[in-house]
Amino acid sequence: MTDIERQIAGFLHEEAERAALSTGMYERVRRRARIRRVVTATVAGLAVIAIVMGGVVTAGALRSPSDIGPVGPEEPAQPSATPRDDGDGVQPIGSEVVVGQGTVSGQSWTLIAYESNAGLCVELELGAGRGGGCGFDVPEKGDLSLIVGSEAGLSKSIIHGVVSKRVAALVVTLDAGEDSEWEIIEGPSGFDVNFFAEFLPPNAEGIVEARDDRGAVLQKTRLRSPSELRDQEAFTEEVLDDHKLTLYYPEGWNRSSETLTPNLDQPMELVSLGTYQLSPGGEDCVQIPERAIESLGPTDAFITLQEASSGANFPARPARFSAEDGEVSEAVDCLDNAEDVFFRMFRFSDEGRNFYAYAAIGNWASPQTRKEVWQVLNAVLFCDPASPPGDCL
Amino acid sequence: MNTTSFGEAVAKRGEQTLAGLYWRHASDAVRLAFLLTGDQHAAEDIVQDAFIRLFGRFQELRSPDAFEVYLRRTIVNLSRDRFRRLRLERDYAAREGDSSFRQAVTPQIEERQLIRDALRSLPHRQRAALVLRFYADLSEQQTAEVLQCSVAAVKSLVSRATASLRERMRGDVL
Figure 1 (cartoon, chains in turn blue, green):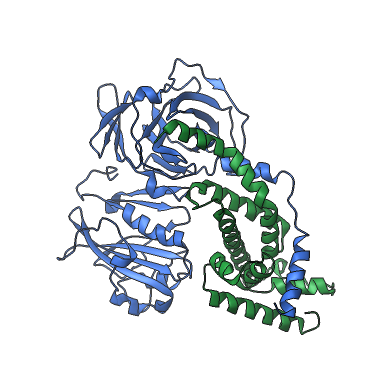
Figure 2 (tube, one colour):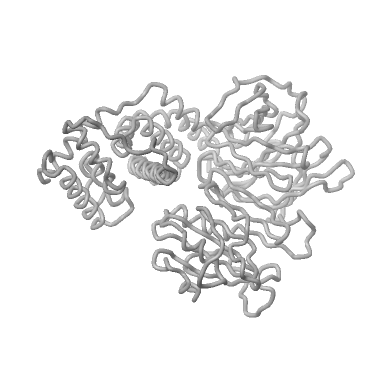
């Protein structure tokens, strides 16, 4: 170590003594760890919130409904903990009410509801973890709202949420082929909704249908695996009916509200999103959002999806998008910052439609940001152009 | 898999582990964040955020020993984000003619303040490299892992930082 380095080290050690832990800091950490995040994303009457209560989802078997064992309406509602603000801006208005209890895999769980300034909040407490969300728009805008999550050490997907009072049955059809009906927990007095909480095999995916007492489907929603969401505190779902696609993207990303390729007719830009503010236009090329990509920062990422009205030789959509599979597009020559970004194009077909996807990633983007690029592309859901509005789930 | 014992283990891990991790690492973490930001309140905020983020992913850490490495890295990243936000705010304020963001000209000319100011004037990665090498006593390899860069880059960052400090102090102090 040189003299100057020694001097710097000495200064830093003396300077560090000025910093001290303040009392109460641990309590703040503890409270925030209890509920990591309460975020809602409400689209087309459906609030879908992904809560990761802290961990890895591993393989496990589905337990029987009796093993899960919600208490149901016969159990009296109990006032619980003092209302609190966990730093998320959500201010409870009423007391917490236990609406359901049970056990799963040897652990007890409790479903808790309370009113807040952000609307109805529902949280599931399981072991040391607790997570949920606020802002359910049932029954105002729909009949079913659910949350999918996972909890460290529990090898199951956790699904809980609310249904309107006119829902008589929740029928679940898993992609794996299993059908089941979920138990509906009658909401205590003061709540104009009913509740449910279920535990499924990890990464279970399928369709949840809310049916009335005549068996008519009031609303259905796609049940998505939490594994894709594991590293994210919140995931926004947007159903873009005009383009017949559903987009899922993590916190920190924003979707452009306008086309970024205003002079491009074919293919047509469907959606663009990035981790930074996006600007339309460009000077050299019309086929890509040139200005948006050129304003990409070294740690940012960007995705745009375009649809071709015609064309052949579009390969089937890959099972997984990855950096290795993209093509080096000649459009890279349009970019002033070509050396500072990883830029790839993907051509693929899905649901009988042909698409281009462009991904741009800054050279200093974190592994998490890079991962999110592929998560967003893998999660996007394209639908048949003839599918009815609101059905692209 | 024995789900009952697994569940019990998870239950035991909860609060105790958070408390254990916190009390073992929080003090050093706040000092590190303070050296990176120069602000006690910001340091506490950053450390809180770092604990929340890491505790939620604790199961994914390869070993408990890795927690400290992840914590340092998270603190460096969060302080970098803060540094960028402040810079954007200052740039905006400068464009808008708001003088409140301009760095205060302090009449204090004592050595410590000079060094402190000089340190704060360094680009974030240079400052982080100095703090990790000479305060946290990390090796160049370990510093590179935290900063997610090469060892050569660490050497370069430290070299440029010390040169900048020497220049800034004009040899008067350092």
